[in-house]
Length: 180
Image (cartoon, rainbow, N blue to C red; front, side, top):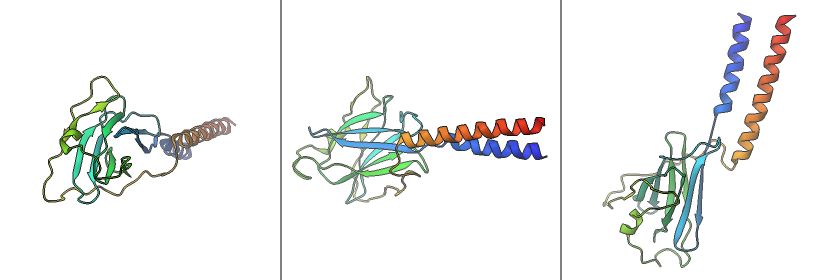
């Protein structure tokens, strides 16, 4: 019974090695577009993960789409204050404020139809669509962030490595102790 308990505890500790946090980078390209890159702290791609640009004032989606295989997009900057939402499911949602265009919000002449054009860094990107603007603000972004905000992937990788080494040492120690 004691061996089963020890194996169970070691297996539960190793589950922590598979933990990951979503990562989102939003940068102004300086040419009226933003660069959006998504991924996970364990190196997993954000391909197929939903991305939304949302009007801060009304809560309405300005643009919605999915990350292509490369996990990055270049999009026109909206002419209203907005947020960028990375939505990979419950517990994996990040909402960041989008950068302001050079002349400030309201100075652009881009229409909401141009927001549907996808200038992806990849070859063939999935079809992106602008969201029809309605009079009701039915969608409100969740205020959920990563479990470890402000912690980069290198810290998470180091933590996973340390836990793996500790786990291995414990397993070797317990097997040697059982042989005595």
